[in-house]
Length: 416
Image (cartoon, rainbow, N blue to C red; front, side, top):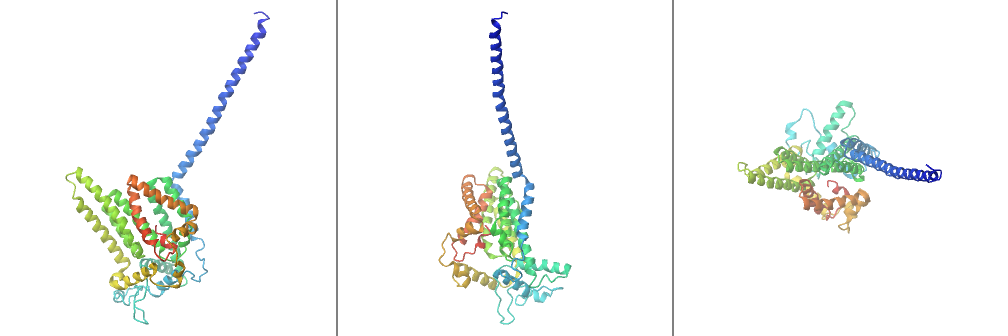
């Protein structure tokens, strides 16, 4: 090779090295970018797995429980909640179980120590009580057991309301678990999200601090709706029995949840349609009409028997019970004038929703709930999913009845 050719060779070598380095550099950037993208995808997958993890429900429920048990003595023992104070008076003055039981007195509804609407000793007239007996009986039983174990007078006026508040908090946690089970139909991530949002909902936390019937009604109503969803999905008799029993327990807590008849009808209708389809493909299948009638009667009797056990004196003195419930209904409609209901004079249809969005849930959660209701309606129209149809059969009639009422306590919307 001549000396004249050496510079050209060196130049060519440098060009080739530069080109190789440029190519290696251009390949390094996509590799690093791929690593970043892969890392982000890995983090996203890990976050997705966490959102879908059933174990996430444990810290959510614990946080919810802490929020509901914190500050249970918020009023310093002064009984500042009027409904709670009235219920405390009723449970201490009118629910007076004895052992061994005096069956003659118990079976006399006029003077029974277990009848919250027994006759007033001073006037001889039935005493008013618009709520159900089941919360009274359970709270008294728990307080009596605690009193026997600890020696503290948990059944008296200054202690029993604290037992009632703890039970309200626990029932609200039960409602959270039921909401999780319902939302599982939409996916585990949605179930965790629903439980988390309910855990920090202001209205839920507030009402769980009161010895009142709202958390009881909400628990039994949610449980009944879940049972009706399961009944419509599986069409098993025991599911309808459980659902009917939960309806009876709910009405024995407060009569306003009688609207649970609508999800019951929805579940029966779905079961009937599926039974007709099965009969069309199986000639040996039982009559779908008889099957539907059997399920309807089973649900009714389960509800009736549970109500009779939990609220027995409503049947012994039906007129007195209906008068108490009717008085409360007239108050809510605005037919009766009480000082504490005058605040709602002149409020419109949007008052309930405005208060719920601004104060009961907060704007973010409140608007999300409204958007979720609209989305569920659209989804039910498009897919005819069982969970959507049964849920809407409960929520829509209840809202259509409650929102136009004259008295608009925000707690009236808690069951939905």
